[in-house]
Amino acid sequence: MKKLKKIPAFKNEQEEKIFWETHDTAEYFDISKAKKATFPNLKKTTKTISIRLPSEMMNYNFDQIEYVPIFSDDEIALLDKINQAIPLDAFLQNKNFIEKFGFDFVYTSAKIEGNTYTKAEALTLIEYGKTAGGKNFSDAKMLLNLQKAFMFLLQDDCTINKFKIRTIHQILADELIDDKEIGIVRNRGVLIKGSDYIPLHDPITIEGEMDRVLNIYHTIQNPYDKALYLHNNLAYLQYFSDVNKRTARTMLSLSLLCDKKLPLIPQEEFIVLYIDGILEYYENGTSTKLKEFFIKNYKKIYHMIGGVL
Image 1 (cartoon, helix red, strand yellow):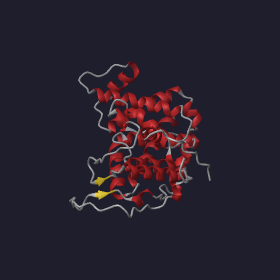
Image 2 (image 1 turned 45 degrees about the vertical axis):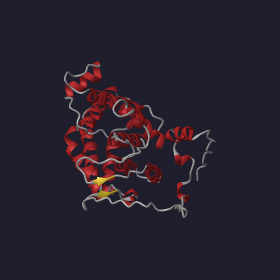
Image 3 (image 1 turned 90 degrees about the vertical axis):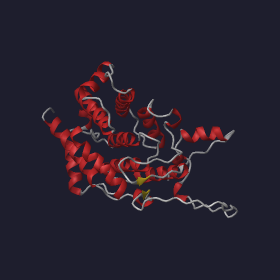
Image 4 (image 1 turned 120 degrees about the vertical axis):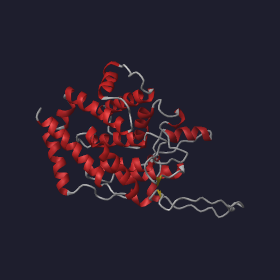
């Protein structure tokens, strides 16, 4: 069992708030020993309220965070074969690969989010810093933030914790959401476009679930299950007010890199499969389509690089 860090003494509530926004609670508390709290002296409110939701609306499912093996033995063997054929060191040391697949990572991830830049416009922006006329600033900024996040992955020290997730979010959300909401747990409810799923809304509960996701993540042995588990549940938890899926996809690749595996580079032809898969996970808790998305992208990279190495 790892040694827990000592919580410092805080001068006031604001100082404590700032501290917990930049530190991982899992390094200070043993979550496994948490107990349900009761408040017997609290008095019930004298005002009754009622909230009516359609029966088909789906609330956050706490059981969904539990780990269930994702990839079969045959699928793991296939992914291992691809990694053996394309060693990570050879991939990272090839400038052409980094430029080509770095662009794919940026462009496809942005298109998943509805970015309106064409490939030519995105390439011109990244290569020459020239924005496309008539396009929103947010589209350009999204692409530039994704580019910065991809380069961050290649230089990272490979620690996966809450602070790292917040750091990735700070890079991806820069100038796209309110500064006060960047890199911190959201304190308001959110709804998911295209889905009846309703995420948690209480920040304390969200923090606890983030800690649980990370604790479970670090117990998973298979690197592919580990990475996809993290992605799926970061997206499901919706820890931040926005930019959650981008953060989840970036963390997926970081997890793979930390386990000496090729990053997942999403390809444009599989965007619909990804969106179907993320909605499937939100509503059913199954990873069938996201697993298919993972394998198809890995195979596509293998076929592209196979003729070059």
